[in-house]
Image 1: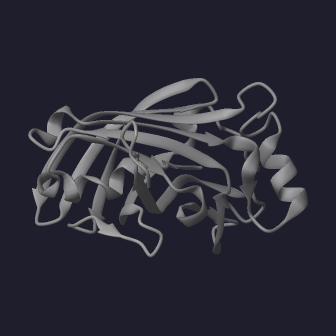
Image 2: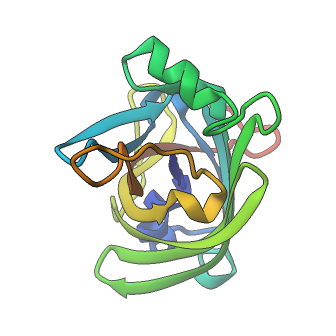
Length: 203
């Protein structure tokens, strides 16, 4: 479910102070993973990911609290390595992707909490329900050049949400007690971003 996920701003916060100028950074979908885990039958954890995510961040290097990020996840791109389960998750009992095709995150505040560590709060929207979430972020403190001349940042983030807060309430009771699906969703994001070239500038 995710981080949102998502939630890509997570990795660029540690580099705010090191950037010479304000810049726009684009999410690199090929090197980004939005992953989640949910308890199943109270005995194990089912893990999955969203394969289609896009986003960008505008970073104010002079004042990181003025930076912003927006991320969009294609809800239908959910993948738990079990086609029948994925179809169920796409349906009305869970994400209802026909009615709510996108999961979005819009940042509201960035707070430094330690060396290369930040908290990013923002609005996460799932199934048309918006709730504020806080993501714990740790990432690379310096941007770097890849072999193709692109400037990159990378890192990771973690948060937990309650799926019921977003209207995802489907469940079944077990004869032995408890429920088939847990309510707490553990979200982990690994991400890379590339600096957007200025007008007239090649990458």
